[in-house]
Structure formats: C-alpha cells, structure tokens
Image (cartoon, rainbow, N blue to C red; front, side, top):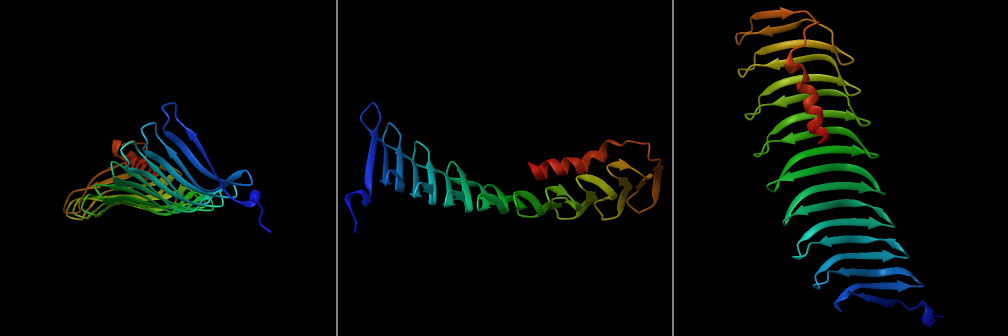
Length: 235
C-alpha cells in the first residue's frame, strides 16, 4: 500500500533576490528525479536526474547565456557513455566512459573537425593516438599499450607523405628512427636502445647517397622530435 511518505516531494530554495535557486525531487529523503539549478538571473545552469540518491541519466551544464557547456551521461552514480564538452556552442572534447572509467575514445575538435583521437582502455591510453590536419589528413600516428608508447610512431607532412618513423618501447625510443626527404628518399637513420642513441647517425642526400655518418656519441638537436610527438599525443 502506498502511503504519503512514499510519494515524491519537490523541494525548492531561493536566491537572496527571490529568484528560484534550486528545484529538486526527493523520495524518502533522498534525491530521486529531476534536479534543476538556476542563476540569480533565472537562467538554468544545471539539469540532472537522480535515482535513489545517485546520478542516473544526463547531467547538462549551461552558461549564463543558456549555451550548453557540458553534457554527461551517468548510470548509478558513475559516468557511463560519451561526455561532450562545448565552448561557445561548438563541440570541443568528447570522452567515453564505462562505469566511471575512461574507456573508448578521447576526441578533441577544432573548427567542428576532429583534431585528435586517442584510444583508452581501463583509464589508460591503449591503442592508436591520431592527430589530424585542419583538412582531415593524419599528421601523426602513435601506438600505446597500458598507458605507454609502444610501437611505431609516424609523422606526415601536410600532403600526407611520411616524414618520420620511430619505434618506442615503454615510452622510450627503442629501435630504428628514420626521416625522409620530400621526395620520399631516406634522409637520416639512427637506432636507439632504451631511449639512448645506440648507432651511427647516417644522413643521405635527396638522391639517396650517404653524405654523413657520425658515431653514437653525437647528440643532434632533432633527436628529440619523437619526444615532442609524445607530448602532443598526451596533450
């Protein structure tokens, strides 16, 4: 039998100026249903839904002008689904969650296009990390495993041609690093072991002829290019 205590009640609070500050639905003393939060001017700022005290459903956050800033789906108190973050009405970031843990893609947008796409598993980067040019070309590609760079990273120029290939293991350069001329010919090669240069540095002209070979004690400035890629991927 349903009693008055079982019926949901609506509780309201007000700003000092008399405007509604919050309207919440409660059942048995806990939030259960829609909750709305307003600014002193009357603008809706947050719209959420609860089930027996836990966030369950979409949480939408707005600015003072009524533009959507963020929309996050919840299931039983945990982020679950794709969170969308906006700036001035334009989509800026999309993040996938499963049971409160980042799982799926992290997408960054610029001018309504995907600027980067990074795969996550169990809260850590795992899989491909891609960075795109404004026209949608892949500019950088890296592979992660359990939060660390593992595998080949590739950099492209604006035309899509490969400019650098490098191998990583556990966030360190490990293996051959190759750079290429605009015509696709090999420009430079060197090898690394656990982040340290472990071979001669060989440089070639645009026809493919060897021009310079120096020992592994050399420290050319360009060696850090792969590390810059790592920062961009994590960025």
